[in-house]
Image (cartoon, rainbow, N blue to C red):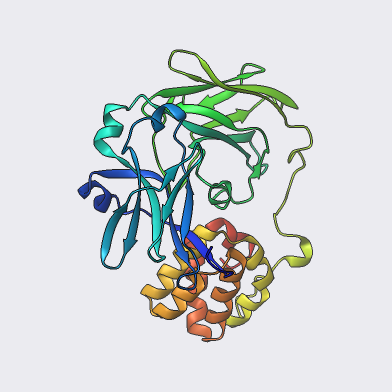
Length: 338
């Protein structure tokens, strides 16, 4: 920073065709960064490459994307964890690999992470979702898409190779795991789906999990303690005092007001972005309102979306309810908006 200032950022989706035309591929999230002009002079972007990969000159660079197109910025410095770059002005920045150099060194491993999420209880066995990801993908980006699933905090560091197949095995044995093996790919959103699902059919209180490569070499092994994690039966993720009466005769804006607090608590960032896209497409919000909302934190964005639409009356509120039912049926059922 060249001076004290407020900086706002969010991750946005890469335009793969734009990258490919420049001979590049994503090597990290694409950050849309906003800040008063001249307040920021350098960015330190986290990378996932190992020390071996950093020996290849020109493998990593930074792209700067504006309304005028994309430019390539050469790093000032590449440390073991970050790429340092001077910034002319702020907009969208992200790390990229040179496609040819990466292809020639496809076996080079990256620093990875194993993330575990335990789904809320259902009538069937509990399900543990296992994610194999690069370590420069922020946990909140993944967590925001998992609904009420509980993140099991555990040391996650590992080393993974793009194009390599991996499998998961567990003790006690006999737990159902799908798929049997999966290829590790470089992917930076916008959607994050589990690489493996482990069905806890025997309801163990603790277990040992191993991630191994196609040569059956262990790349990650941990003891996982499940006792006390979501073993109780949960009828609803909404406390009784926050439950919403399903009174269809209420005007749509009143129905939104009755669920306002729980909507702000529960709606995820990706769902909010989808809602904003639909509201813009249907003319409920304008470009300025959408851009203003997108730059806010998740809770502030949720508050802005529901309050802006409520103030526009019954028709606009009905559109938001219908859009929420479409993009997040689970939350709309919990809020009794269906």
